[in-house]
Length: 295
Image (cartoon, rainbow, N blue to C red; front, side, top):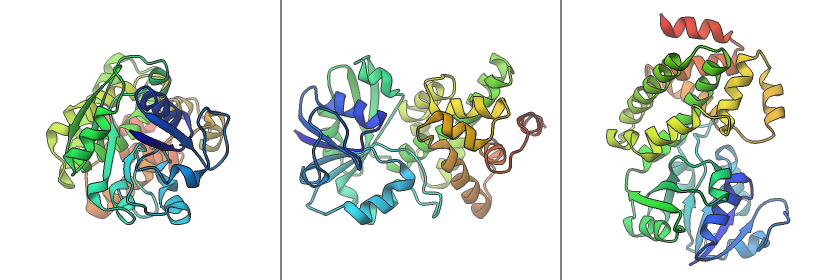
């Protein structure tokens, strides 16, 4: 396959490494980078198969400014909900590309480990099963690819787990222990399932790679950017300080804001996400959030 990766952050470069094993792959981004097979954006967009590793909050603006429709297929590699509108990424991309040309990748996958070709399992979701299988078949031998058609389930689990990961970092940063973290993650899984059910996602999706698998990974490791945000909150750092030190996009931060907004509008009971929002946006003392969750 001829594949172009759009976005050269850590996850974009990891997917470039993965897909380059068996395919003709180029990579491009807004700013030029010293990467093998880096090409101008116009050349990348001429490829039939694209992998979009653009952070969720920048997708709409990027598509409006840069995308020219040549009938390309798109594999969406970002995870998040648009804060300004509450739109899921299938809706954002759907304004530019028909649903049968869109697929979404999810699952437990730290970029650093994919770059090392360590064993990984990922899921590709699309309403077009042939397209999902095409992207899955192009994965290298060290990645096991699964496919399904529950796009909204994949999107919600991939987005929501980043919010729970922030809470996981807070939990460990406060030294609350293994019992507390296990309770938090398991209740986080229930909460994201409840949110997904409201939007028509299948419950089993949240027990799969993109749900429980990715949640367990990101909510308990310092390799997770969102988990490190939580550690910073527990230490009493400001969000500006935390994000400056991180130097990368932590999708859980804007996603927490989007979920809070949706929860208010739809009257959904999402206590963990609401407490994460309060710590991020209102500067709530994390110990007070713990107390409120326990009560």
